[in-house]
Image (cartoon, rainbow, N blue to C red):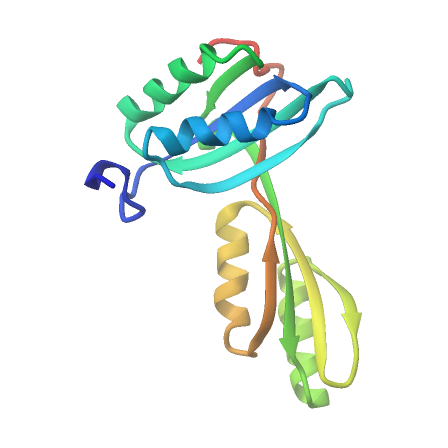
Length: 176
């Protein structure tokens, strides 16, 4: 892997796309990134209001030239209906993290609950030994929570990919 595509690269880009919904379409898109040497940091996939169309949001590392290259390659794919680079500053983003935290004392549980409340999260499961919490928000909020959660002892963690939509009336069909 070249330095241009390494994860130490600070530049990230986010691509939103609509694709035809059929078996194997996600693997085609993922293979395109893989063939070109890009490691995907985040991917979120689900159908839209039309069950024949799937929305995919991918975050990866690379500069503006790399982002434009990937975008051109995506537009060549038969299954791709629309693809667009999403600007983090002009879109709404959300992800989900669920974290199972050790909480073997009442004091520790209370402290975890206070932190979860600050992050406007939810306790989704509780017992004498652990709490499972859910936090939604942008990538920075999720990363901040995970960093604080390490103090309590993370037993298990699962994180969704980031989903994003342009703010206002702008849609995926509008030009960058």
